[in-house]
Length: 405
Image (cartoon, rainbow, N blue to C red; front, side):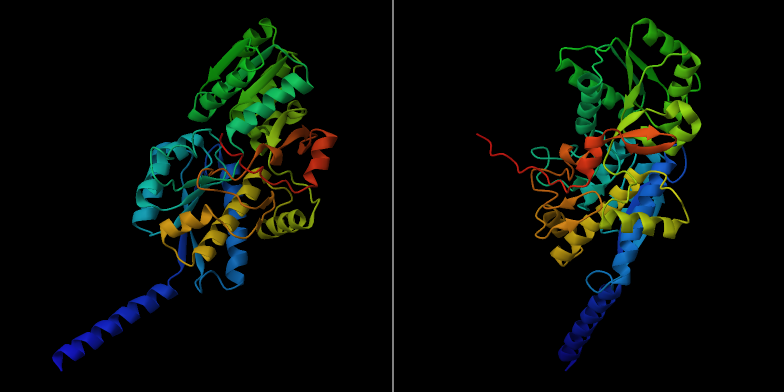
């Protein structure tokens, strides 16, 4: 009788624990710079993620459980980013992660997700090495995925815009001294070399710089016909305003932070004409985008999305993650990772229809055919060219991988 009672008690305890677990919410980390110079990107990304999670919870959640976001401000600082990710995994018991805006933060933090076998979708950071940091043959299974336009894509677009469309051959590169800026510089130099070109000037500066007059004068003296940039908003404004003060009318063509409000507002009319790659432009030109833009403004009491790219990528990253959890039927990290690598149904995002976004050998959701060229026009980001606007009306899918001979 004692043994029977003990067995029954054990079964009851096991069932009780399973029931408690089934009622527990599904915790997802969402980390980004919600304060500091990169905050327009971080806050917009977070708002996009919240929208997607809120919609799922209104529909009953996932696997019969509600979704809860564990929101952590990494302040755009690598050490802080690493710390808050470790806390989210160890203390908050998150089953997956979303986020990362700054490349340096992503590079410092992804190891924690990889070692814990917790999948993460990087939704803003574009550094070329981010999604490749943990990949075969270095590791058997990578838990890092991404749905932002990598710098491989952006650097190629920037150089094409300058050389092919603009017919400029004397180009200056201005970049900040972060991993983001340095990787961007390397990518731009590589793309130029493929066209048998070398930059006539390469200028590096620390984030938060207030005066680049001397660097701009050097580039001007070297005969630069256009400035290619890799930096974030406030520093980009220093370039634009310094160029105007010199009376030097050359175009700025750079990575996507040229679309940020802390560049556009600080540079004023000097921002007009700046061109940059964009995965999403705030234009209500189809049903899904119109609904997303409207929902964003309603939820945040805004008239303009501070960083439309970050918001849209944040929203879509949450959709991709939820599709994987649903397909896996589990919150176990290895099962979510396997589902992300083999999603069986299309995911209808606001940037594109993902079908499929990832494979075992490809953890990049976006391809170059999904990225458009934007331009600052009277303080707003619009399409740089009529063909960009026309292309935005179409749904672009990733090209199928070609077999290796």
